[in-house]
Amino acid sequence: MDPSTSGSFPSVNRDAKPTYCGSKRVVNYVWNLELLRGCEIIEGSLEIILIESKEDISGEWEKYSFPELVQITGFLLIYRVDGLVSLGHLFPNLAVIRGTILHQRYALVIYEALHMEKINLYSLTSILRGSVRIQNNFNLCYISTVDWSLITSNEVAGMDNVFKRNNDYTCPPCNTSECHRCWGSSKCQKMCPPECRGGCTSKGECCHEFCIGGCYEPHNSSACFACRNVSYKGDCVNACPRISYK
Image 1 (tube, rainbow, N blue to C red):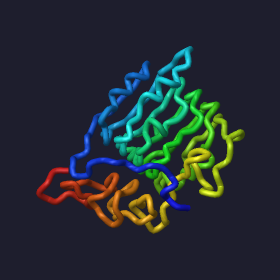
Image 2: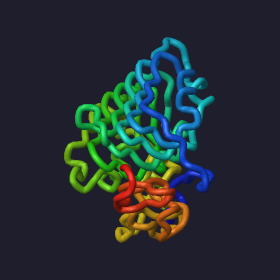
Image 3: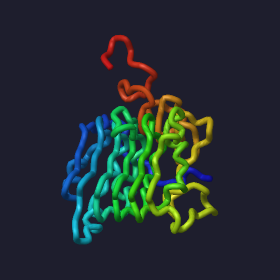
Image 4: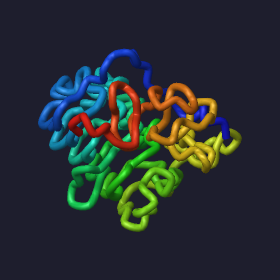
């Protein structure tokens, strides 16, 4: 499969330092998503919770998109939100969830999002620590069509993931002429060659080994979406120099 069919990729000014934000909790109202504006890396966790309404608020979610968000260092929690059909429009370029902080033992939780039809995090390629729990989302399709073992770490390998009481039986199939694994009928799961430890470009070229989640240019440690270990002066490195503070 051509990895370029898997989705969009972040478009940012690589000469500028990324914008870091602390943990964010979006609660009660959709408009509180404005708290995320401008965040490229969330150092901590993102919780979108308890946004419930008896009216149709699906149009409110469509007003917001955060293509600048590429990485969450903690966990992502979606819990009891109404009207949210997909995460793809909100976070089209989210590539990495590090799981340095977990919700129980999970890095990604989607629970009782009753109107969600597909996750559609088509840029997500790496969950470095923790498992996935997707449960009680009765309209949610395209869970089993994602190969979660390619996203979660080798230590987890999907063994602790929980997928219960969703709607994976009446979904339209993946477009098999383009891909065999997908986030939706028109969004393929990004597949990189197995030798690409740091991810790959949209053309399937291997990133530098110090990258994680993908890159803008192949074999370039300063062109990573995120760093596997640490970033030093805009370059992904294995460890900080002795003269610096981590």
